[in-house]
Structure formats: C-alpha cells, structure tokens
Image (tube, rainbow, N blue to C red; front, side):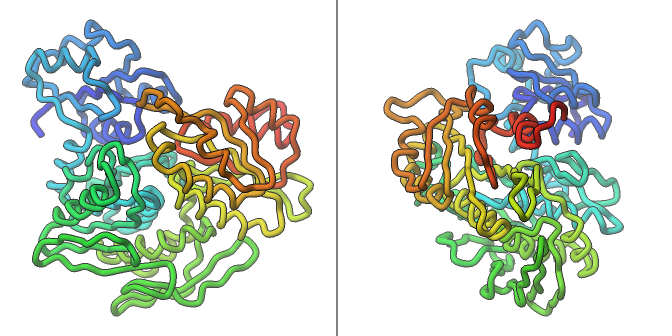
Length: 462
C-alpha cells in the first residue's frame, strides 16, 4: 500500500483495533473516530492511535485531509449519516470497509481464514498461538483478545502466513482470498443480511469459491454447506468425534483435564492435552491442528500450543473456579450468542461441574436475532437450572415492535427463570446464592464481570 496514514471510522471495534495496531507497527500514522471510549480505545491511544469520540469533521487531523495520503477504513456498524465519513467522501478519499483492507492483506500473504457462525474466534486464536511457537511465527488478526498475549494481533516480519477471522456479517468474508480456509459451522445467523438459511449457506459457498487453487478447505462434518471450491483446491473434513478426514480417538476426561489423540491423513498426534479443557474446544483443536500442520507447524509445536493455549477473552473464560464442596461459587463467561453456541456452552459447564446448580445470565444481542431465533434460544437456555435475562442489547439496531427478552424467556423450561433489567443485575446477584454462575451473550455483559466477581468472593477491591 502506498498510503502513509489511515483513518478508521468505528475505531473502537475489536476487529478494527487489530488493523490499527498492525499499521502502527508498520510505521503508518493512524487516527480514527468511535462513538464511545472504552478500555480498548484507551489502550489504542496509548499505543499511538489518534482517536476522537465526537463526530465532528473539524477534528480530522489536517495532514489527513489530503486524499492522496490517507486511506479511510470503516466498519459496517457505522451509519452512512456519519459526518466524518461523509467529509472524507466529499473530499474524494478512497473509502473502504474493514473487510476490504483485510482482503488486501490476504492477497499479499498466505492466509488462513477461519469462518463459521460459531467457533471461529477460538479456532483462529488456537492456530495463531500454535504458529507463534514456530520459528517463523505468523501475523494474526483475531476477533477476540488472546489471553496468552493480551492482544488481538500478532506480528512477525519472518512470516508470510496471516491468520484471519473471516466474519460473515455483511458478507465481509467475500473480500478475502484464503490459502487455507476453515468452516467451523453454518447455523443460520444475520438473517437481516442473508434473508433466510438458503441465503446464508450461499454466502458460505461463495466464500469457499475464493480459496486459491492449490489451497485447502477444512470443513466440519455434518454441515448443510455444499462448497464451491475452484479446481485444484483440496477439501478435507474434520470433527471432534470419530468422523471426518481429521478426527479424534481416545478422548479422556480427568479432574480438570481433557486429553485425546488427533488422527488425520497420514498423521497421528497422540496425547494432546487442552489448556482450556472444555468439550466445545475439541472440534476447534482438531481444525487448528490440521490447519497448523498444513502451514508448517510440527506435531510437537501443535501439542505444546494446545496445552499452553489460554483461550480468547470472553470465550469460555473462567473467572472463578469455585470448589468441589460448593462453599464458593464458580463464575464463567462466554460470548455464545447463537442457540447452538448457548447449548454447547451450557453442556460443557455441566461436564465441568457435575451435580452443581447452574444459573445463566443471558443478555440477548440484537432485535433481529432475538426475533428470528427465539424458540431455539429458549430451548438451549432450558438446559440450565436457572435463567436470568436482562433487556435486549440493540447494538446497531432500532427496536422492533413486539420483540423483547420475554419472547425468549416465556418459553424457557428451566425450574427458575426471571427478567431483570441490566441496571439491577448486581443487586440481584448480591441477594442470591449461586453454585455456578455463567454469563452468556455477545452484548456488554462482560463489563459487569469484575463487579460480579467481587460480589461472589466478598471482596471490596479487584
């Protein structure tokens, strides 16, 4: 790229942040706008990004008003009415979506792109962590903060491999050109974009058509997706069970331990132990191992990587382990925001804490997602003993008449269930007794976790 500076509109998003950090590391000047300050924007400012929080074109750095010198990048969450974005367009700047910038990176690197309605952030992070242990390392653009590094970005000047989370929202992943693609799942989502399940699957089919000839598609078994790969692309299947070209054998559960073997074409990796020992990570580990091998990692590096992988923030993150006697509660947070993810997370907690009462706080994310999948969410949440649900987190959406949390909650079959506004959640927790408490959803429930942990431990400070 010939631009010396980049301006990011929607700069506080997790996916935008890793691009900002990447170009800062390349010596570019980075500035941007976001609606709301956060811990992430504070960190970005400390790293050199010039961020503002007022949608005022007068705050654009004067040196960035030249269309020849500054590329403008925006996220689909930013509306067309944004004044800063409109000003750049008026001046004739090149204005592209975040996904298009990622697409440029995939065309100049050997990209491993991980797509799926769920599982993609953890799988992507696993691959990046494994490859970070190889002599060449990797460049990685993750959709979550990797707890091993405290960042959503990895940089290596020795590697041509880029690990990228391929987001299907707004068809963003159609900008990418993978060398290796992983599809973890295709449970319908974002129907406000795709219309129906057939449209959603077509979006994934088109993604598979973008894999370079000579590349590989790793496809989870049992999906409805019919890939449309180009000639010369190898298609292999995988699963965390005993089916697929890549699969597991000898799954062994122990006290806080999960071991298994991975079997693939001409490959056996024995006695793998997961650093995050939950059932939903078996599938992710098989995909990560297969992709990492194809990218040049050794079996030893894969075993070490999966053992030392601490997980991505908000992906089955254990804040309190509790104890076996139940005298102190466990606290787990997970980003699960589709019915399948919610069900998988709850089942995994059941295996980790057998016999304990499981209470779930689920904050619905988006009116459209709630409207489209309310019965499925109710069925998944009914696997918990107690369900607590605050109001819907709207994110980018306007309210839809008749769509609220009760659309889900009324059909939940758990023995205990209740509605509680988000502002009252901490008081409810103070006056309740929990054995295992789990917070679920893609909204902002995670901002309450430090306070929830203090309440559950009886601490007055972090």
